[in-house]
Length: 261
Image (cartoon, rainbow, N blue to C red; front, side, top):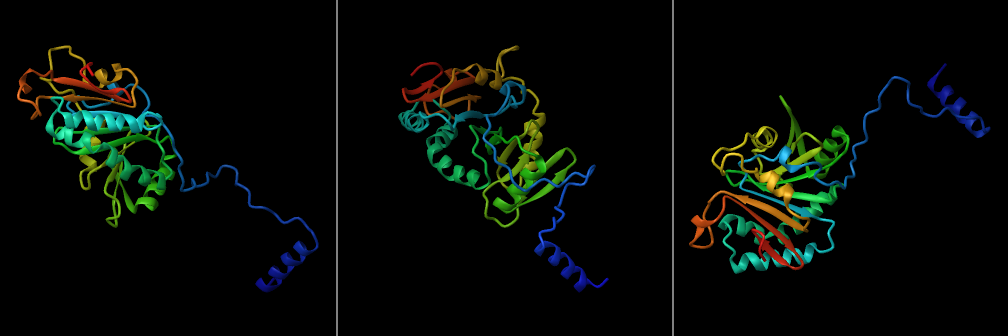
């Protein structure tokens, strides 16, 4: 039976109204996931359970809060007024609105509109963004690779995606519990290990003192809430009197540092 005759046969059947067999999944065969992922998730679970204890800054941003724009304004005004915060943290927090304005369109381009976003500074000052996307991992990786021109690279424990064309400012580390971290280029493997296996850092406080993650979990709800650790360079001369773990909460009412507006 020639190919031309076969084509004519099936066209004739269709023209006569005969049913044409549809493509159906074959039993026992798993179809490849579609390369798409639309996610709008919070960070999930207690931060104490996975945040490294030797972080320098951790700030949770409630992207769904209607007060967020006002909270950003109050945060920037409070930082500029000087509240005894570390200089590097103050510079970063003062630019939070600009950073979110650049980052959120990139997330949306990949179908990601998280309800919460976490800003981290590690012990060396690297800036990391963490969100959660409860999607099929292969679909998520394919989506990010296409949207952000990344190349996925497997590791012995998990995987990372690294910039392939220089169009995206971050690399991506895929973490447990459906979390992903946007990291500076070239350090995603190291930061992935830090986020997944970060050991408690001794000397951050008295024995038995709460970890930064536990302190952050204990803060009341706010559009922006965070913790800072260590006695790095301060914006006030009385830096030595500041506590080792400090808290901040920003809302439309103002910036609260260590529980005081």
